[in-house]
Image 1 (cartoon, helix red, strand yellow):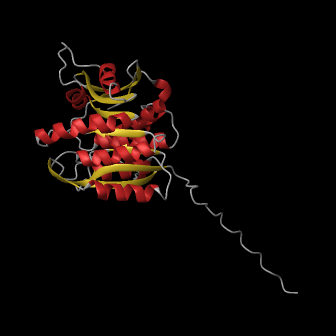
Image 2: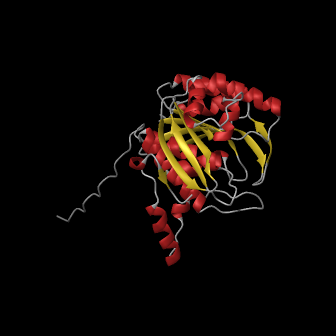
Length: 313
């Protein structure tokens, strides 16, 4: 009898719903400069090993220097994109960036309400490029519709203070707990406030609840001005939470990741610098670069180091 060749082992079958990567749904605008928006979300979340479900809410008209305009999709287009994907795939977290209109915020609030057990990470960018009336209307809608659904609010100190504490009359700027208290009035349990002016050469970021500062990190200032840092940080934070990290650990890793992205940042055009969110994928055999990498590794933040740790930037 002739020898019968052995049948090769069959590859394991992945059952529907058994994704090896956590799924994260992102509501954000397309950014043709690649600095922020969905470009930042896709690259940062992929770097954190998340599968991104990107819902396009509109498009910026911008370059690396300025945002010149924004075109918002209507809420029906947003809802159709999101509902179709959600009926097919389970999500472990939502991220909401700039979505362009109160109507879109209302549609997102309805969706996140239906998935009330899924955390929502909301990022508020600087809107000073926009019309004043449009800013006021959008922020009012965020306060009423989005913040009650938000788990962690992320934003620059000055941006959040102008929004949440417009009548502040203190002799000093509001601290992280005061910003967190203002957000908590609208239902937000945690706030990650970036860009505190700690000293001439340092900036600080603080994760706070109304009761306490949970984590802090200090960075040396960059000489360059970056576009897309806030979207990068909030996207990484969201992906890490989706993967099951506790909030403090996720915050530490997201801040470390942003620090490394900025350290490897580059200037693709004539305007601002852009974070290199895929810095880890570049092959570099130069000894000097290797030594720099070892130095960066030595300064990496760890959740156990909070508070207060210092990195190079």
